[in-house]
Image 1 (cartoon, protein in one colour):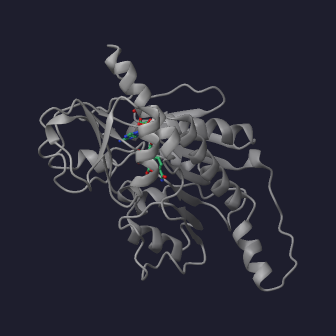
Image 2 (cartoon, protein in one colour; image 1 turned 45 degrees about the vertical axis):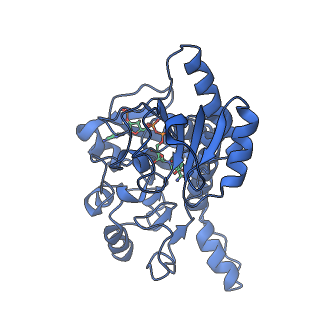
Length: 315
Ligand code: NDP
Ligand code: OXD
């Protein structure tokens, strides 16, 4: 009985080592090696090579090695088995660090100070208190919920938006199409932590950006956009156009339609854009392999899988 690791863009070494340590009873095989497809009971994947799932007659669970599952659900060769995603404190904390870093970067006007430093200019700027800055988080799942709670603990005025209505102490929650307009109109710093699904494709467009608050405490710096969800959520031409016409004052982007971001992308040199290379919450082999093996252990004891994806909803 084996677990097939199928990834592209990552080095197999640390994953194989960690899975072998965590699951000594499982034969760990890799998509770039030779293996008997009939023995594969579990597959664990991140952007798996095309066609690798086409002939796995006995696979019982497909694990995503990340929180997102768009890389699996869009495939034509996905087996008819439960798809289980990562829900893991290590990954959640990494994302909350990145989101907090970006929110503080905009709130504390760090890009302006970076420019002043390059110019040798000593120029203190007026700084509002966090409670006067309205942060809005799209997506109140595992990652969004942790982010809103941590941002609120820093004193920001925080709201969230999701498909179904939530109740989170200290956070104003909005939902659905009817809640979106009101949510946007009270948001100075927009954080996007949505999954990529047919419903969310292109959701960050010019109309949405123009719906953001215009009465912020720092009108020359807000509103800004922070996206760590997926590139497919954003209409990149609209982000650039609204940055250029002043409807959007800045952006922090970790995800893009094409990754790696092409060298001729206008995002690279843009003075008001912060680019990171899809690293907001990296999958750590130790934390993620341990989590996958824990799910397998529970499954083999006859317990229900905890983080199965709803294929109909796409997340
Ligand atoms: P969850 O599935 O836990 O949460 C998703 C949230 O999005 C839920 O609140 C859900 O609403 C909401 N949502 C989904 N579709 C819609 C919609 N059409 N309208 C409104 N709300 C919607 O996911 P996670 O929080 O774990 O992760 C979110 C995403 O973050 C991942 O799918 C992935 O794309 C991205 N990610 C990026 C990383 C990076 O390094 N850049 C790392 C890890 C994840 P409801 O609660 O009502 O279902
Ligand atoms: C994820 C990611 O989905 O890293 O976990 O993008």
